[in-house]
Image (cartoon, rainbow, N blue to C red; front, side):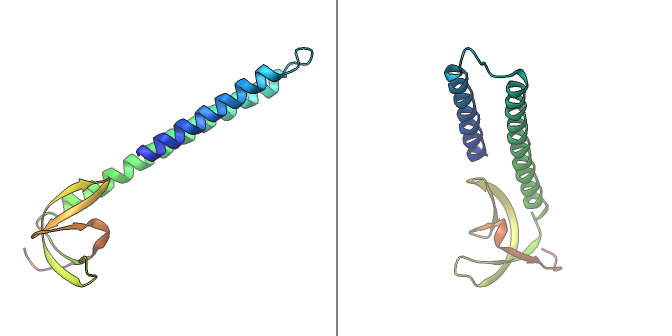
Length: 123
């Protein structure tokens, strides 16, 4: 999310700087036409809307991962451990670490991305 906000801020700042530079350097005898100016404002508004939409999608993805992690508590899963071997264990809890969901399985913190299945065995 932070990266989206930084990219968004840079995009908006650059757009505004370009627009101000264009207005400062325009020929007073032939100022920018209303239609061109309105077009640029519409582009700026569209850019801002797209950036907000991207931020909302990122939030929705985070919420989905949190929901997935919480739904696995008490369930037995199959996962790839740090060495790349297949392991299994019961999910005891989860945490968010650097924007990623990590499941607590025994003494291991396992990324949700490393879960490759779930067993039907009762925990």
